[in-house]
Each structure stands twice: as C-alpha cells, then as structure tokens.
Image (cartoon, rainbow, N blue to C red; front, side):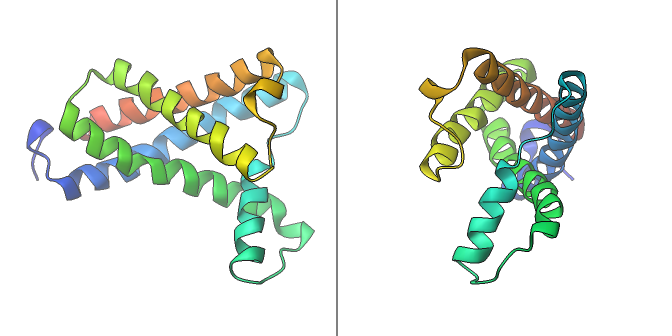
Length: 156
C-alpha cells in the first residue's frame, strides 16, 4: 500500500471513510458531553432527514419508536460519508492537518446551514441565536480536526 502523497484515489477514499467514521465518533462524544453539561438532549435533525428519505423516496412509514436508532444511523452515515471527500482533497492538496481540519469542519458546517433550512428541519443561520450557532460550529470544527488527525495517522 502506498504512503503519503503516493496514495491512489481509491486508497484516499478508503482512508477517508475510516477517518470520517473516527471524526464522527469524536464529534458524537463531544456533543454528548455538551448535552450532559447543558441537561439537554441530542439533535433530532439526522432522524428527520432519514425519515424524509425513507417516507418520501421509499414510501415506508418510520415508527416513532425507531427514530432514535434512525437518528444514530443517519448521524454516523452522514459524518462517515464526508470522509472520502476529505481523503481525496487531502491526498491532492497535502495541506497541514490542522489547517485542513478547520477548513473541512467549516465546510461541513456550511453544508448543514444550506441543507437543513432547505429541508425545513432547522431555521436559517440568521434566525439562530449566536451562542447556538457558535456551539454548532464548534461541533463541526471538532469533527473536522478529528477527521484530519485520523487521516494523518492512516496516511503515514
């Protein structure tokens, strides 16, 4: 298997999948810790997206008692699915992991600011209280940095 800048696109995608999964795990841990400190629950946005896909595309109803499992599955699938994008970009650009991780986390956050309001699952950013927007950004920066760190380890 090739190393560093010698990675093939397929190797970069494979490393990206693993890095995306690792980043999602770190982000989830951070989100759960913050939720515990605040005495709040986790976001149901991933489950709402999954429910729209299942009901709208597949025409199957999602029972309420399955929403928590769907939430977890969609959260992991979404976070992991961004990993290959990171892998291809990093294997091409070779940016320092810290810089690329921050940029990547901000990119994923930016995507959510478009996707979730478009689906009417979350308000647009200008209607979000600044402390909540900052917290959401922090989740995504942690994710981006964790993806970058995991990818750097895998790419040695």
